[in-house]
Length: 230
Ligand code: Z5A
Image 1: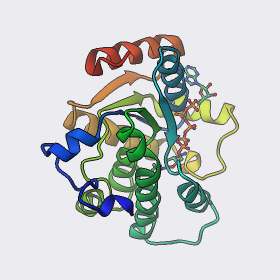
Image 2: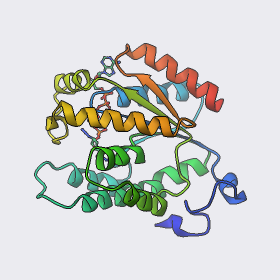
Image 3: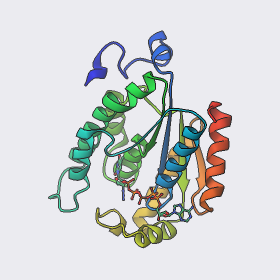
């Protein structure tokens, strides 16, 4: 991974190197199934582009050619049973390439990167609602993400019944997550809310059940207030 050099994601934010290189803005959208995060990521990207900013829209798992190949594999519902650590390593393998080839270069150029899911999804899907110890995720996070944390994360919080109904209406359901039942999705929701409470400096929680336009307006206001970027 290219970032393993002295200017890699291992740098701490207090160093001159980190502050010099990271001129862009990194915004992520998180939430459960059908919460509307992809919709809001797109609307914010459109808005920022219309106001003259250079925006890179990306997603996880995926976002780079290598990571997109892994995405197809990771989300294949017919994968044979495998260890939670194996699954986590695949997510972080994809993320390492995504950071090195897309996110980091875009931030270095001063662009705004808007990412549909990032590491918080691993903490919740593989950690809080899955089978992986948070301490294991912490180690992978240090190794792969380092200080490349988002400046701002929007959590689209939604009742699982509503999110799953939206996902179903849209024809989703081929990757197996939607089929896991409401109790599983309640654990996801609680996991995301817990994470947001523990990292309130970068999280902003929105009601995903509100109308799209109302949510989009709040997203824009928050970006302007927190980052001076709208
Ligand atoms: N995963 C993981 O386990 N670990 C990880 O580290 C990462 C991911 C990164 C794929 O993610 C899976 O990978 C995911 C977690 C796992 N689990 N699943 N499934 P994904 O992001 O590609 O897939 P997704 O979570 O299922 O996203 P989604 O179904 O595309 O949902 P969404 O992005 O939240 O919603 P949307 O596409 O914006 O909207 C869904 C529908 O609702 C659509 O028809 C919209 O027009 C409609 N919508 C949106 N907003 C509204 C409002 N406000 N009102 C009414 N209708 C709305």
